[in-house]
Image (cartoon, rainbow, N blue to C red):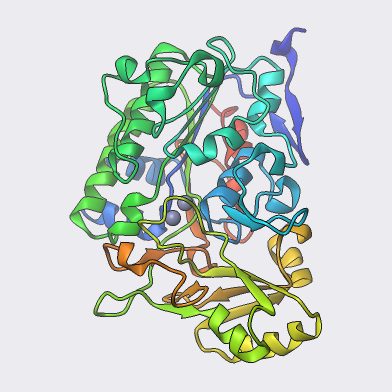
Length: 417
Ligand code: ZN
Ligand code: ZN
């Protein structure tokens, strides 16, 4: 088949323009627009500033819950969780009632943009900071040095030709695998992206970082500004190639602690046990993942399963009255408003106010592990994310623009010279 003549490709529910030149989508994990504003103020991100002034800058929405995996998979499929199925890092598996991580490819219900472009012979490169996303992002890809490269910074030392399409990443980059809790884990993503452009010329590249820095430092902090300067330096070099770049984020980030530094948290399971009796309701926190040091499994979103359906309305009314809780949705309301898969959320979905997080019980969370005043995400207050293109393009803004439109508009904008 001569793919040169192919102008459009159907991916899930949309027609994408087949780009003639490489496209690079960058997801800066936890990049609240406040981080860019702070960095712009001290003038440490000249390349991004140039894109903002002479290219395109909008504020977009992330999907809710404003967590990493649902948003990364939305970006990777161009669709909301209702279509691709990934609505948290963690879920109560409806098949067996067990609480499990949602990292497994079996949970993914839609093909990725990467897979569809590979079918028309595009070269695919995916680099993720944390390995937890790698198998989902690389789902059904034909991996190999001529087809696709897909690896994580975290496990770059274990990368091999069969699983990742690349080996000896450390030698290739001249960098050691960084600590999983570090800014360098994200730097490794950008260094890999740049090297891939130099050595391998992918047609479609996705780079996705970790929000370690944003959980730890506020936008004005010197460490955060240094991090954004590092990102800008790499983007400037990637921009030297004839590429269309879209920069967005999986979610924002907000402080959720008291003045003294203790986390702001409401333990909802304790309330429910008190109202209904022990274990009549079960709180699931889909932020839960194995990397809890920076957020203690505390975010601003939770879903609740009830043993007796009568308890749903009783609890709904009581939850509404809690000042810490901003929104309470029934399953149906949550499905409609946030386009979530109904079989993977509980009977109620609750979202806390901006400065608050939702916990299970006071004894469940290891708050000792939190080293810094808590900053986290998950709610509506972290839904706004930047959406930047390195060239001018007519775009809507939120609520009509989502981070998961990134590849769609990267393809569209790549037509414009
Ligand atoms: Zn994230
Ligand atoms: Zn996070």
